[in-house]
Length: 213
Image 1 (cartoon, rainbow, N blue to C red):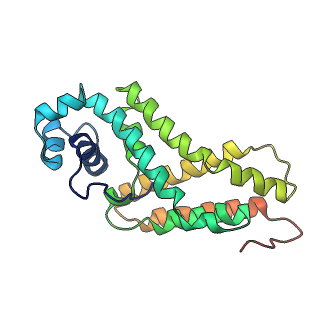
Image 2: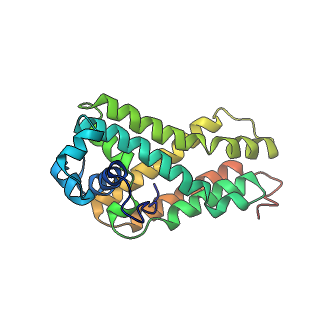
């Protein structure tokens, strides 16, 4: 997932600062290891302010997943790959963009909702559901381009735009796990390259691949 710009030019409201703190700290050390004190210190607010906005740490986790979905949606909506005329070029451009933003520290490019889902799927189902909504909501934004690319190339298959869109997220989330396991972002970038090759082959036809630019 992306590295959205912090939206606090004047530090913003306490709730937003807490959500931004959650976004950054949970990606760095996990949900369980993140305390309310950590969040308050990073956001520059009191515990009273925390509990004014969130009845519990679990409620903060749910809100953080929704905030992640909101801010990353804007981040991807403004990305340059949308300018391609051909839908397959847009899909491949999306993957190029995903590779491009795999840079910096692990906590800067890995996914908040993927991190939380792996950790709390059994202990906090409500957070798991919020994370799923974010992941599959993002995947759904790829479906129109996949469907259009299939139509343009006359592709009839036993897979669907939704299943391929979900697969892109499975590979990306797996790439983040490998990067965390090795401490090396290069393996995540390699995974995106392999995904791009796979999708390119899915859409390659005997007539070639004209008009991708």
